[in-house]
Image 1: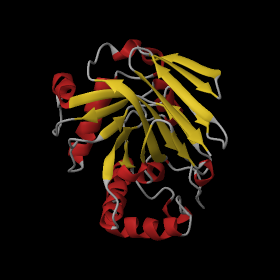
Image 2 (image 1 turned 180 degrees about the horizontal axis):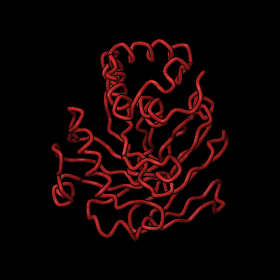
Image 3 (image 1 turned 120 degrees about the vertical axis):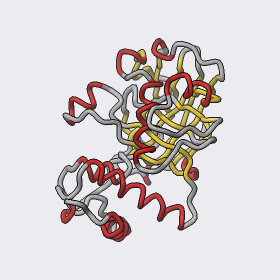
Image 4 (image 1 turned 90 degrees about the horizontal axis):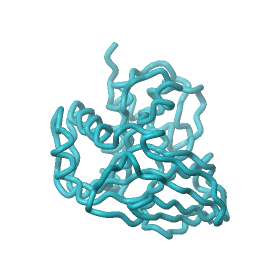
Length: 254
């Protein structure tokens, strides 16, 4: 059954204004592709209201995440420019609903890329910088039960990102080790290839799905390509992450 994307987006827009990000009336009503289309319709409304698009996240980029959902796709989530923070920023943890902090690699595009199959070579040429990063996300409240297409429509729990230091000299990203600390205490250590898909493959999948929905990767967009781990966001914590050979990032939660 084909949905009326504009009508569903309008319903969600009104429900979200009331704090309901997963209305019971829409649980089971959307397909995965519907969820992507509705997310873009909601993004367009945000832009019309004065926001700017800052970039994208790629979801389900770990075998573990896909196994948990039983779904082999790479959904996108949009990132608002107003929620891209420099390293060392102080963020109010109380505005995040069941918030989380995830270390993720961040790619800044220097050129526009579009099409169904850009290829790793084209993507490498278009990326001007790879940085250490954090995703700040949240599990927003809803009156309905768990529903993956509605999670896609809601942007895959994306709230904001923190951009750390990085480099334009991209080497073997699969070997990058991330060490994450909270208030100076070691909390996690992971090597990219042990927990995440190849980052260039994830970027390619993102460009392909954007193309399928009439969008493209613009110069200046930042993209995060999957979480090495997830930690709860609590007020008073200072999170730092070192990406060996790449850069560092930190965020203070107020």
